[in-house]
Length: 133
Image 1: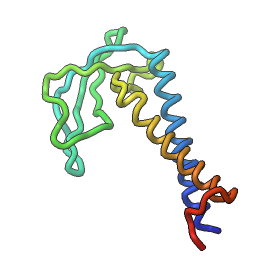
Image 2 (image 1 turned 30 degrees about the vertical axis):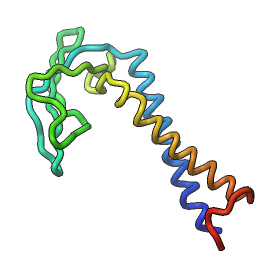
Image 3 (image 1 turned 90 degrees about the vertical axis):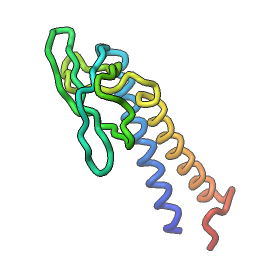
């Protein structure tokens, strides 16, 4: 019976993490400021290229930050313009203004977590048997 608790707990954790970041993104999208960032350089970490970007806020403050999403090969080139959304209260809190980053990833996390919870719940209630004795 202990087998069922591991995927049930992991599924619940995935769902909660996905929901937290989804809601955080939605808040930033509704209250944040939009601007264009320019790719200046890259940092190579663990075989992934992380773009270093700079952007200017509406108060003419310039920020140089590293994106937290890397790729190999690099998705962007030096000089590319990337749309971002930043928090007016904390301009270093930003994200790429792209539905893949703002919604899709977190919805997938929530869906996987919810599916795990539902399947484990159905097993626990006796509707299906996924962990044979």
